[in-house]
Image (cartoon, rainbow, N blue to C red; front, side, top):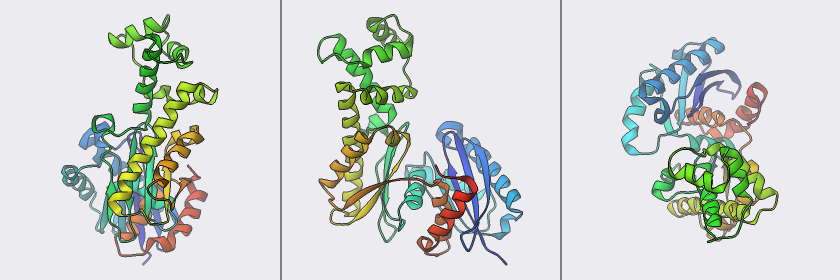
Length: 326
């Protein structure tokens, strides 16, 4: 009987499940809504897993009993205390197969790195970094953003831009085109009205303002470019921490870039890589071009003892034919 493997990429806006056979051929993809418990709660996670599973198995024309292994990459799975409720949600699916559960950053690493090990750095709404070595040992940052001193995502770049506008307004720092940009974004009457509105809770500037900051930097604004460079160095510092955890200082390894911000600025990636190479000269960066759920399928294969790196190219090419690139 043909063995099948299922992988899950469960995020804060959408969730994917992908089924592949033992040869690495993708046979079905299932879709569902947001599944991170931080966004939809534990009931929402269970609902997303059920929906994605049902959709994928139905499309593949198979039953859960034909699944040999499963891999789960779930956004919001960061701490040991979160392991038990995540496992309970997974076990409620009734899959009679071994499975592995990881933070969703890791499935991006497995999908993007040629040998399935190295580092992955996320720069999107938030920032994160996870890595694993050749033996499967993991290293990671907290995913705790500014509260825990981790910067580089839109959730810390946008507040940095607001601070730059405030400093310029009070003549503590140079003028910046970010002032007019954020005034326009907020629909304010001017910089003072903008800052007053923010201070008094009358207005907000969300992470969706990040592309405007990158556009301002690309137009040549010095302050905006300094902010992007700072974010790149902060992302690099996340990676350096994981490099030290895993002892990669003398290794040649790949750093997989995940997230929309890397596509918005070469400066961000250059500053990140320079920061990493100061500690680990053998590091090189690559952009994730495959759907992260590819890594989840490979993780499901690993759950059964398969050396998934030998099937990466087969799963990747089949996935691109089925769902395209990221």
